[in-house]
Image (cartoon, rainbow, N blue to C red; front, side, top):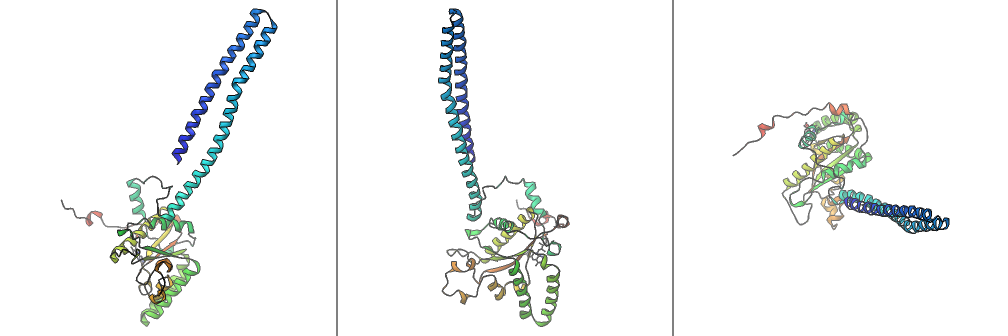
Length: 334
Ligand SMILES: Cc1cc2nc3c(=O)[nH]c(=O)nc-3n(C[C@H](O)[C@H](O)[C@H](O)COP(=O)(O)O)c2cc1C
């Protein structure tokens, strides 16, 4: 679209310069005619001949030049209108491209050039799990979260099932999930373990949970496509890839986040699944899968939560990654 508009605009510029050249040629010709009329009048020593020739020259000049002038003006106006329309259409198309891209899962029209291998490796190596104790309490906007999910949505997927699902928990929902976690620990853990766990969680709730802007519940849909049932491990692996995409995007956007498995006992408890929209099977009786929330069912897996927040740049910079040598993790067979 952009190059089409550019070509059309260039063609118009060429047309306009043609008009200008024709008009300059005509003007030079007429200048010669006027000069000749003056000389003819002088030679004939007659004022009448001079005036007649001069007026004839001027009239001819007007006759030849004016159509060009009006033509150029009309073309200019038309071009302005056309460019206005195209600019608007182009902007609209670009916007739609990006929006549709995001919605329809196409690469966004604004996708820039690929990073160099060094830049890609730097992003991967500098991604860090940033823990809530270091968040500054700033909120992550809806647009930013959408961008993260957009990145997640480009994960690889065997059988094109796209099993990753996310439930964004903010505000009251976030607090409700935290409270539910406490409640599940209280009711499902043996008494002695419950006491210790609740003590630990209460401390976290007081000191760090308040700094988290949102949790993204990570769900692997067991059978995202009715016509395909892939092995469960593949769907969970694809969902993990989606989380990694999200984490990388987080780093690129200067946000803070990390993947937490959450409390083991609470993560996949029926109460938690129901809270996240994976209602017990009996609640689904007679309900078409597409009418369920995100089409989620109890057999879908909750793979923890991605915490999201903001951290001051110096806090982010303070995180250091540690890895053993990559060469120790690869075997070569010739
Ligand atoms: C599947 C998964 C679950 C995780 N769960 C937790 C968790 O429950 N608590 C935690 O502190 N970190 C958790 N992490 C984050 C790791 O602690 C973190 O990746 C590790 O310390 C390496 O740091 P880095 O991510 O900055 O490279 C989890 C990571 C993954 C991949």
